[in-house]
Amino acid sequence: MNHHATDAHTLAAAYALGALDDDERKDFDAHLQTCEACRQEAAEFAATTARLAAAVAQAPPAAAKAQVMAAIDGVRQLPPRIPAPASAPAFGGVLRRRALPLALAASVAAAVLGGVAVWQTQHAQDLEQQAGQAQQRLDEVSAVLAAPDARTVHGKAANGALTTVVASERQNRAVFTAANLPAPGAGKTYQLWLDHDGTMRPAGLIDHDGTVILAGNPADAGAVGLTLEPAGGSPQPTTTPLLLMALPT
Image 1 (tube, rainbow, N blue to C red):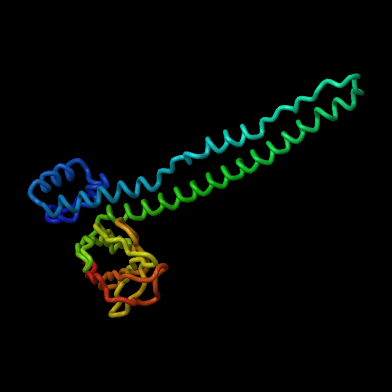
Image 2: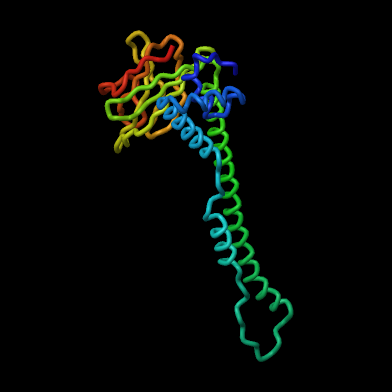
């Protein structure tokens, strides 16, 4: 990445992502020994990266096997015991009596297992889609954090949340990270804003600690705002901003 030595304070994100070369990492390790702010920032970015990576992983549903086994067990039926008749029945009658419960069991099994198969297919498709979306978000965030021109600014919201914004002018993207963010409460969410010369434009939602890509165009925005809004967000802020922090330049 060949960052100049005077840019050491801007390397925390790239350090957390493992995007530094060996010499840069060695130099930054030495810098961390004397810079408390960078130690905290690097730790926050590492934790955020871990959460984003964990979001990509999708474990199989724990109940899937039990549900399938229960369905199979529930349709394994034996023909009913029929007392031997006094005289041997006609051969066709025997076949009909035996075929009826077997056919019933087979039809029930087909219906149940078919439903389980459809559920499994749909669930697998949902998990695959979620994993793809999480991977895309991780790639977008990582690209901004590791950008050679990434710049960082820190802030503290009125509710005590610690915030960080990393912006890349070259990519025209910015990411927002929140830590110690209190729960928004029932029917509420936190909404992000980009301040364009006094006009607040929606930039996404965040309801817990983590990192999000700011929606919109940060290139001509001067600040990032954070407000508490009704669930789903608002077209304009309805409460006093908890945070209004200048974008890094």
